[in-house]
Amino acid sequence: MNLLELNFVSKKFGGFTAVDNVSLKINRGDIRFIIGPNGAGKSTLFKMIIGVHNLNSGQVLFNNQNIEKLSLNERINLGIGVKFQAPSVFSELTVKENLILAIKSKFNDEIFSFLEKFGLEKDQDVLAGDLSHGKKQWLDIALSTISRPELVFLDEPTAGLSFEETKKTGKIIQDLNGEGVTFVIVEHNMEILKQIAKSVSVLHLGKLFFEGSPKEVLSNKEVTNIYLGIL
Image (cartoon, rainbow, N blue to C red; front, top):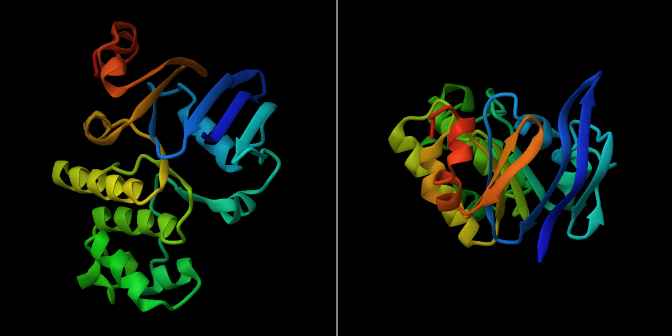
């Protein structure tokens, strides 16, 4: 069953078409990566799905419900989690206080299990602003998933992370996926794609260029040409 469905969505900025009639179907339980070179339309599509940008045309369905006219907060209340590219943690609150705020309750057992899952149990009383960049990224993913959303959007969750931090991030996402969370991830990092992706959508010049398994995408010569040998 499709958890998320985009039907011919488009977005223009003046005379420039950033996203051009893109249709996607995300199955429940998927880890879908959206990739493409700079200017492909990935970030615009991400912001259209979560409600930051209005659509010029098309339809967005979540659990068969039209959501394209709902605000970001309304979409979150339906069961959608969002992590933007830059960590959006509350710097003046501790790690634990950030999670308490996100879950809107004080079930400490639930919170501690999340601290352990993300390797933050020793940092629970540290101000979020004092965390390393990697730990801020993990806290931000925790904030987007602790309320048990069905679908989570992650925008470049490994940006600025080391190889080992990237591997750990992939493991965290896989564990959450195993607990029933569906993910849509915008990424440039091919290592985490190889590690955890179940399916991949390639954008180019605002259009959906290719879809398939990670193996199919990474072995496709046309995709390689788009990336000018980056893959």
